[in-house]
Amino acid sequence: MVEPSARAFTTSDEWFDSRGTRCAARVYRPDGDPGARPAVVMAHGFGSPRALRLYAYAERFAVAGYVVVVFDYRGFGESEGQPRQVLDIGMQHADWRSALRYTRSLEEVDRARVVAWGTSFAGGHVLTIAGQGEPLAAVVAQVPHVSGPAAVRSVGPRAALRTVVPALRDTVAARLGREPVHVHSVGLPGATAMMTSPDAYPGMMRLIHESGVAEDAYPRTVAACIALRIGLYSPQRWARFIDCPVLIQIAAQDAITPRTVAERAAARIRRATVRVYDGGHFDPYVAPLFDTVLADQLEFLNAYVPPLPKENA
Image (cartoon, rainbow, N blue to C red; front, side, top):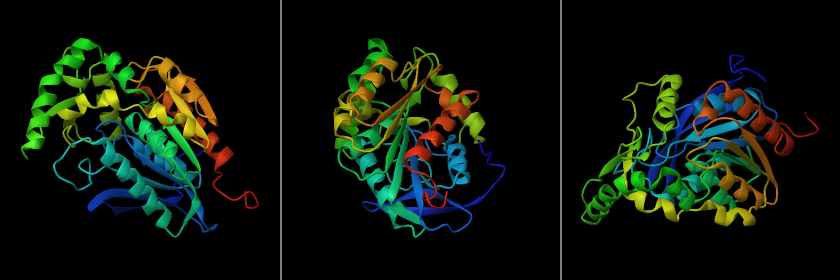
């Protein structure tokens, strides 16, 4: 695998409009001018900003010859939007479509060869928009959220019930035009948080530390009302409508997006490539699993969306 130390790309921090809100995008442009290149558009999972290890993937894709656009959803990370930390599924779908439209507008991008890359909750988003007809050359869904009921079952009834009261308070606050009521995205077992599996809190902290950002650089909260909606969000419903090639990457010991549910969803996708790894939900982002997961992504992309036209390869 080509290492990012052999830097052969430039980056620029840019913006795109999503229904009147500016979303932050970092664009990676490979050196050289072989003509229009394929692009990989990336966003993070549940309540996380792009700075938490997505740049590590983007660098490798850029070295391999892809234009890469990594963005934050409105209200998260470096993107604009008020109120902050509100995870609205429909708005995030709109942000995805705006990011893809923006990417296709870049002069160095081949509009017909744009890939959507999503992890965890965003893995569900890219499956959903692909199934709804977004024209994509391919999809990469890493440890994807595919079933709302399965996600609720995976946290357990006690953990789910702990979020109900703040979720109801947040719903009332939103209707009254007040500030959101937030809960932690991840927490230790027994805490009031959206993810409380034994690996959730240590996994998130390792992600923060290995990203080189300060622990307090980004809020680790979401507006609590999502707790009442996540059980209704099942991207697997769109799986059979997806026409493009899809790479589904599953962690065998994933306590947040269970393996069996992900495998059943993948079986509904006509052109699915499935890879299963030993590890939990947060392991693909860091060593030792990171290099293996990334190598499979590059192999998949090279097979279906090669970085150079066949005649130039």
